[in-house]
Amino acid sequence: MQHIRNFCVIAHIDHGKSTLSDRLLETTHAVSERTMKDQALDDMDLERERGITIKSHAIQLYYKHTDDQDYVFNLIDTPGHVDFSYEVSRSIAACEGALLLVDATQGIQAQTISNLYLAIEHDLEIIPVINKIDMPSAMVDEVADQIVDLIGCDREEILLASGKTGEGVPEILKAIVDRVPAPKGDSKAPLQALIFDSVFNPFRGVIVYYKIVNGTLRKGDMVRFVNTGKEYEADEIGVLQLEQKPEKVLYAGNVGYIITGIKVSKEIKVGDTITHVEQPCEKAIQGFEDVKPMVFAGIFPIENEDFEDLRDSLEKLQLNDASLVFEPESSAALGFGFRCGFLGMLHLEIIQERLSREFDQEVITTIPNVSYFAYLKKEPDVAIEIDTPNDLPDPTLIDHVEEPYIESQIITKPEYIGAIMRLCMDKRGTMTKQVYLTTERVELTFELPLAEIVFDFYDRLKSISRGYASFDYMPIGYRTSDLVKLDLLLNGDVVDALSALVHRDKAESFGRQICKKLKELLPRQQFVIAIQAAIGAKIVARETISALRKDVTAKCYGGDITRKRKLLEKQKKGKKKMRQVGNVEVPQKAFLEVLKLTD
Figure 1 (cartoon, rainbow, N blue to C red):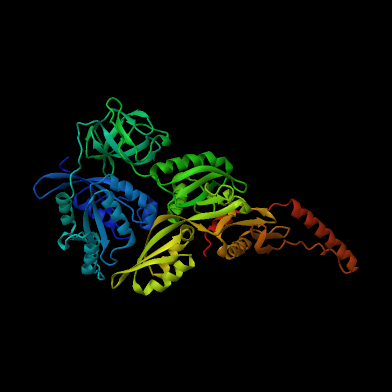
Figure 2 (figure 1 turned 90 degrees about the horizontal axis):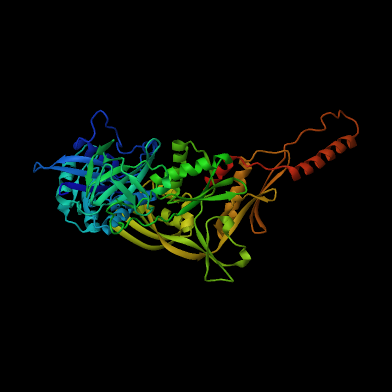
């Protein structure tokens, strides 16, 4: 155990974690030159296309130190986007040290601070590294000052590196041996292994990734998963290299995988403890807190008979992404589907994309919203959780409604302060703090309703600051708000999948936008379609799609005008009757397009 080092790489998005990880793999010869490619640890096509890390990736490296001693490194490369912070918290729980990476051209950003606090909470040894020092716009001295201010280290402790050229990588490897403590644990004690990830393999079942805290695990051992109580034989155990490498035995301090032939994904829970059946441990390891979803949306199969396939796909996806939560629900417009909870809009987008690519599931997603609490006049102390607009009780019975608020930190350049403040004020935000970190960097703190940042806040923030603003947030509880349910009616019938909970001040403009959008998207019928947005019984917006009209008077050549009138009256009666029996079909494209509405 003295020669094992477990560490992860944490940083803000786009600060060069994956590139630096590539250089660490090359320097330790974990990957041959022939198989080496950019973002070597990112195994999803989606990660390569977008240039972001979505999943944490663990790999074992071997390093010969200057004292001629061989060391085993277990490296976990983590995501940097705020929507995948749960991946980071799980990776940190399996490590003793962390490389804190800061981009020399951008300096410390919001997610850097957030991930750093996570690492400090778990008592990790922090090794600060300034990356991208080869860039012409690198501000090495200024960034070093920021790091000293943030973590209170000495200037000499900060390492300089370039993930692109490989400069400074040998010094990083040496620092990991010298500074990161070896894992603590007892190989002779009863087995305790913490599950930090899992993945579904169609041929071998569920593959579980874990870190052994105490004890020894051998191939063929009978193991028990403490939370679920299930018992299995360890068919195969091993370590995680670029490919899985089977081993006969693994000791305390090691990170590895186990295959037991589990086919049912519900039997594995991330954060659970693995122990022996014959000599179990006294208590389970404290796992991770259950994740709290920020954004909710309904996911429905296009064909109703695909419902069970969609359930199966979501369960397999949940194995690999423990921050996804879902439960069945039904909708009058869309049939049976699932109410899903996500950590943010990018998370929702990625899940949709993964369902399509990995499981061939084409789905319809309803308008995303957040979770509210309603209090009734009869029972003012009892909170009713509102996850969908249809859960909202009758407005006459409601005493008040509370919505979730967040505290957001935005770090940017001084010239963008005005535009960012305007954006936050538009989103019903209040500014609580403004701190100049340096002459070129300012931190703005706002309290905002979570519902306002769900849609397009992040994209708009990036565009008005030309990419120079970083955004991080944390929930700060619920506050009373004037919310109303906005219904969408087609010829008087409510389309429940397009209902939304919005603030009263914004309900009218939001309703008008949806009506205009649907007028463009809905196909014309042989009868008039009225598209209306309503708050209770009050109509706040309306658009009309005129009927397709057949020229019934074409056969009348000249003659008496009454003949033409008679034909038009007959057509009018037919249209009136058709309107009573005709159904307005809402195409799938309309649901998807309404989601893309911007305020």
